Length: 209
Image (cartoon, rainbow, N blue to C red; front, top):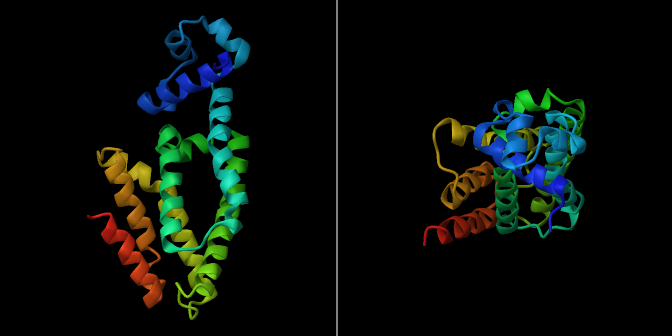
């Protein structure tokens, strides 16, 4: 059974996703839970505390997966699986990614962690490219600066795919996740070896069947 604090966070997340963080008040959250604002304030003194708690709830899984990234099986298929897991987690906290710039500037703890995790994501991509080369899935001739640019492109797309989907009226469903995951994966395509491209096409084609 969920605690009161967990119920507050869960309801807040749903309201933020439906109406945006800026549109939802403490009173609205309390009303959705059939409790008084005073009772809610006992657990969270202000809305920003709920925001921060939800952010770190979301990133707990990301942090864990980044920590265990070096143990991941390195294949094009596994990269696709990891991409889709990340995208589904992002959808659960859609409000954050569709208003990214404004939200990270509302809270110093969120901003500090978000910038710190960027560095970890960047290093994880560089590690991934090294492992892909070792497995003969990625061209060894790729220069360091190309790998750095590639990591940057993939992080930027990862951060913005959800915002752009919502901006242009796209529906968030399994089909769009598949499409966006393939788009992110395709950024790698020009840098793959013949073996890597073969595995890439096997994954893309299997999803069309």
